[in-house]
Length: 146
Image 1 (cartoon, one colour):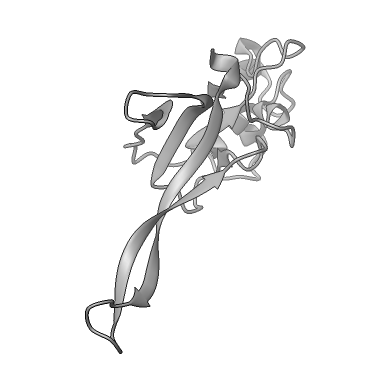
Image 2: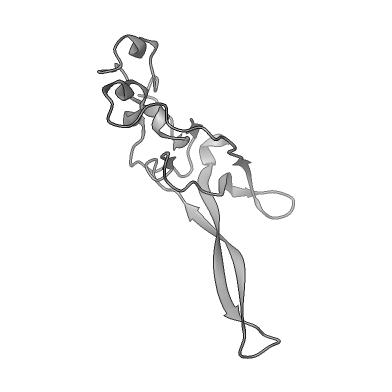
């Protein structure tokens, strides 16, 4: 079920450890480092900030035939940048453009995250995407990605 999904990012960290076959020497090795994102705000990645290497949606309650959590990875390959600089009045109508990726949980009381009518009044939009990124928990829920 989609409602059981969780979201994590995976990056590489370098670990320095003792060389077991050569005492007195150390080895530097890369190791996967997982970061669980519990809030929508932590799962919204702004342009200009470091973007995670791997984006992973998974179900913590189900394993595949190799014993790993069932899930999928989003492979992000875009070279795009934000449409308008933050702070411009017109940018209020396209706050979704602040993020190369924003992961949010759909809530029944949220009808839409943008509106066609924003093109007529971007200075005071009817709906603002920024209002859809909450501090609420995102684990074990349906996900919406932008």
